[in-house]
Image (cartoon, rainbow, N blue to C red; front, side, top):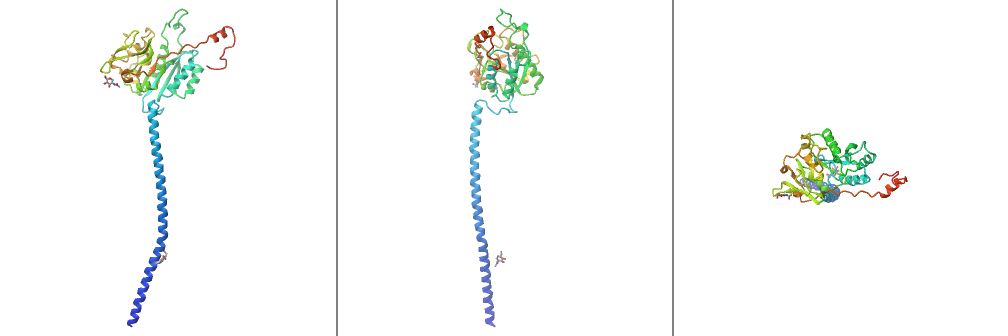
Length: 340
Ligand SMILES: *[C@@H]1O[C@H](CO)[C@@H](O)[C@H](O)[C@H]1NC(C)=O
Ligand SMILES: *[C@@H]1O[C@H](CO)[C@@H](O)[C@H](O)[C@H]1NC(C)=O
């Protein structure tokens, strides 16, 4: 009886040992592939992590490159061409037909195309818009308005008169100003700048004027018979007069290329425009008197007027002696079927 009980215990113990062993081995067997799975997963996770790190590295490299390019481009004022948050520049250009017109407008357009948020208002001195200017503007892909206003024949100089009876460009510039009053909202942020097709412009001049609150001024190179004409600036950084030789006592002895006007200020003075009656050299004064009460209201730009960002370069007239000869001799002209 005792033996039977002991045998029972032994058997029970054996069964327990067997069970535990089985359970253990079952677990081990089960655990083994699990461990394998885990290490595979860990391996996969490591691969994913490496991949992620590499991509993050690539992204940060690209971010650095982007920042570098942004910096480079901002040096030349080449930000995104369309940034709704920055004020728009309305560049007004009167133009008339002459042999070099297409060359001049091409050169100027290739500067203006680089200026962000610029709207080009081109006014032809012509009875109707010409094909040459129409095609040229369309090709730029710029934001522009193409207008025309023909200077009446009676205003042009007679045979022996050396100067124009009425100042050139006045009608065209006033046409552009009227267009602005009729088509641009008085609430829009922007500036107005007169851009002649024979001047040379640095991209910097456009960024100097973009945030003007009123009227801003800066030097103009190669004008008035001088290397540079510029406002006289005092120790407080205000305009006190003009460093010019010709007629320095004009109220605003400044070239058309040397100032820009805030658009809201322009809208607030409905009479502000050029006059056909002003003497030569007084057009700028005629216009600015509407917008500026006294010289110290002027906003001094281009590092206190110590930098030149625009030049009154004028192209030499094209030498067309042979062309004129051809026409006199009733021979075919050189530009038949080709736009120059
Ligand atoms: C061993 O595993 C199998 C399948 O998972 C299970 O059916 C069996 O009961 C296990 N054996 C033990 C001793 O736990
Ligand atoms: C312009 O001049 C004023 C007065 O001398 C000075 O305070 C200011 O820092 C100058 N600004 C620049 C951009 O040089």
